[in-house]
Image (cartoon, rainbow, N blue to C red):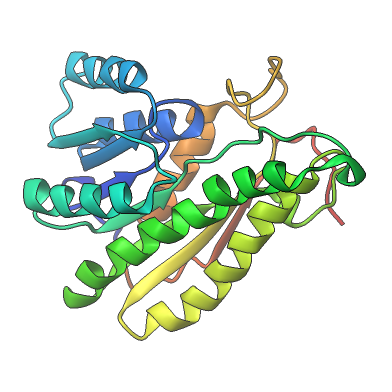
Length: 241
């Protein structure tokens, strides 16, 4: 079964300025896809754009820096992306963070609210902004980067786990609802990836470039396939049933 051509796709990637999102932007760009990129840091986004320019990637690129937890900014970015690139074929909800480590008994409401805003409500806002234009064109693909914390309870990661599993619940329901409009919805569950997301280097974990290639392969599958779930872990990881 033939895969899709990257040059035929417009791929919107959130959290594109670092870690897995940056690696995916680079991989998709090298493959020839047209890109819509966003991240919080203007400096990091400018650095990424310079890298893509130096790579002489063949596709078009539209990019903005803004706070993805502001729903109005999300909607405006999607509108400007549509104006600049004509459509959005693939949304990759990659932005996320874990800024509230510690035992559940010590969590504050503020800790949990911050995690929910970034890891659940922000990707929901992107889904809601991209759904109408995808539905009007008869299809699309929404790839949601979750985490293996959704499948294994890790001590000290209560707020992160709660926010990711809350979004996982929305993704599962949306998958069924969106299929009526021809929109495929994927949940990707990465295990440990050696990125700046972590406080210290973990070279035994997945390299972001390797994880990005796996996700890009999912994106390029023939649209007759519904890639509902993908779990990727480093071989050293055993936090599963």
